[in-house]
Length: 85
Length: 155
Image (tube, rainbow over all chains, first blue to last red; front, side, top):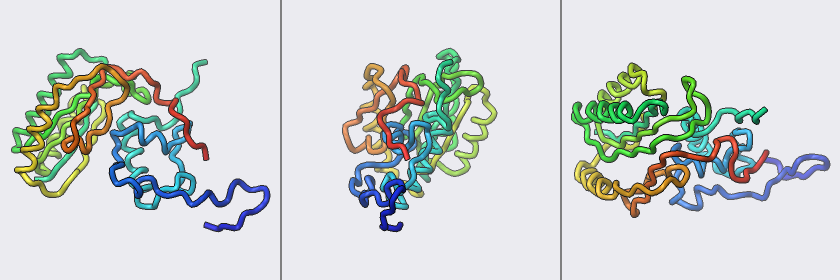
């Protein structure tokens, strides 16, 4: 990704974050572990892109798979629940 | 034999006996085909993230076992047929299995199993449960709605 910061743009370079899963081998990605999974999903339930989350490619892929599995099992939503009218 | 993890969700509105019945039914299928059940985790009733078959409650059961691919096929065939099961997912955890280590794991888990804690939110993942002191919590009810969560990063 380009490192050239420009004016009037959302932060272009986001402090080289490290992959949380690479650093801590105990942290496993599992579709059953909704608590961890939720950290990588926005308020609307969308999966956070790698350039924001800082995950490495491999873990981002497993993460995505796990989130989608969790969604299938209704452990996580596909879309946010509508606010009570 | 391969190591699998199969989760099935029973309609939460059904009475307990029905739920128990499915547990018996499916575990019998596993063992009946020569599979070895390592552990059975029941998460109990949980709030679903979205409506399924008109209900927002589901009873989650997870079976950790070793078996043949044919067993999985049979298991899933039955999941599809049974109307009580509203969701299922089977995942392969390992290609080959050390039967001895497996037996040990099964025994260890069976011992720790009667550790039903009070409802305290979601059931945590039990991936490494065999190695550490099992801290599995069986939840009867999950109070938190799925759409709200701890502070998250917004892109």
